[in-house]
Image (tube, rainbow, N blue to C red; front, top):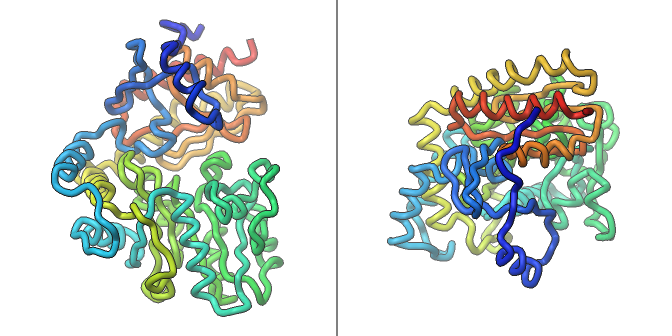
Length: 402
């Protein structure tokens, strides 16, 4: 049996504040988290939880990683924000570190994945000559909640009641090169894809798919945009997910774990393409601010200094060893998909109530697409924490039908 130590609860005062003053656009669990350290968090009742989904994928280094805290503390005492009409040494250094670890491009900084994708969409239209403006995206993809990003998101559930959407997006099945080629016409400007789909259920591309997209883009003079908001910055065991497949984009977008939990987003583009984002054409007031830049630098340095790319790979294999046997053992566990610390376990049943079951047992997980258990654990997860969390999760899945 999955044993609980206490039923999660929420203070009456906190609940009243939210009921009165906060728009209820999120489905919230009855828990108020107040403190975190590594892969553990505590609520306002003093209860500890093991977190296999820290910060919805933003806290790749765990909660309150020491180098991030130190960098923020030092920077906050010096300079918190200045506009991008001035130079900031930290922002330039941050861009250099990202460029050197990717494809040698230049960076535009913003605050989120949606903003990074908006910038990429705008740059694609600016760079390609008229009449080109259309962008091909993929079913199951997710690119953000702003209007261009949500239109690029080929999932009808996100489009309900908010039309008309931005014109110029065509959708192809993820993995289907023939469908992509059939959509290309004289007005097509770019192809935009997650190298590994995250919200879509941790779906890896079929062999040759990304290389095929690169070939189609080159053949038709299109830009290839990789949305690495969830997969990038080391989560897969390489700095960027596309590096597993030996394919280079023209534009790449980043956010989530980019700054170790601090809000931050970036778009990287080759120098040739980046030149089309001319002064006055785009901006982000807080983008690349000193706090985000210092956190971004500290994140990259910590990953390198502590050899966390290798750790992500090793942890991914450890999760595979614990979770893969469930596929053979249980008829309703269909498939395990993973790359480093992007982990999806697909069930043939509605898996949403597993999130509540695990919460009550002290483990935080996520369910996406209704039937995929999604884990985005921290690189700093200990072996003991991995075994503890997998024990809770495996028990919950084994008891799922009972």
